[in-house]
Image (spheres, rainbow, N blue to C red):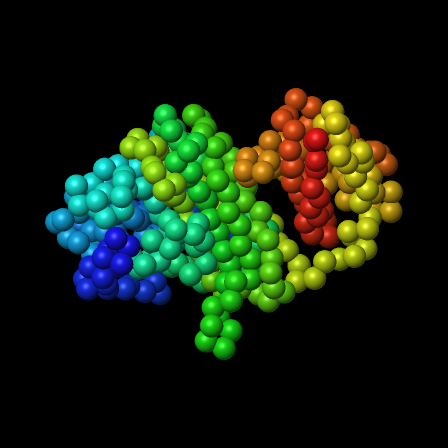
Length: 321
């Protein structure tokens, strides 16, 4: 079935090329600007699942799974991605067509690879040269079977070396249902000390083998945040003490007597799915010997703390057993 889809798509699909601190802009990350391509409306600088199918199969594909929506987090529009049945494509995919957007222009094979592997590093992409720490965005996810449908946010930074694309960093988060706009953070895991030359981002309403009609993902205000140094600063790493860890009751403390601005820096804490569960502004230097960090009431599991120190980001894993 996959081979049939690719053979049909390749025969009719042609590629187009796109001629882009703290927060680093993503091209049209606010989804305010839309254009018509392949007879469907799409966010500028992004490709939708509909555009891939429509550009490949023309009138055989008649469904709109991705659209601009006025129920935005900020500004006028958000991207709305809804899993729907299409008379033509659903038979090829073996179920509903998920809504999805990918930064840059995407081929049918790349789109199917995202569904199969939840990896976006070889799909689309636009110029980007910052070693960013996180992908950050606001989203809503609704639908009776949204959890099982497995909506995903995907990000990858790459660089072409000797004609071959090399992954510099990547991250992915399976999104949990959220009735109201929720801030999500996807930390990037670095595999190389090189500087990237491209960024790849994708959002999709469901990658499960069996998807459900009606699962709907809204995404808005997509940015990259933080900067990761090519090599870790061992003095900075050694300056922070975190205790107790694990913490059975969710109460932790941060200490950095030698560098007071580290333990007292602003921070963000995310859970294993990328949900931001706590944020805090900088505190007085007097707390550098034992700043309280409060996670009481949260479920047991692993959490990620990221401190925005004057010397760069510093991360620690927090465990509530």
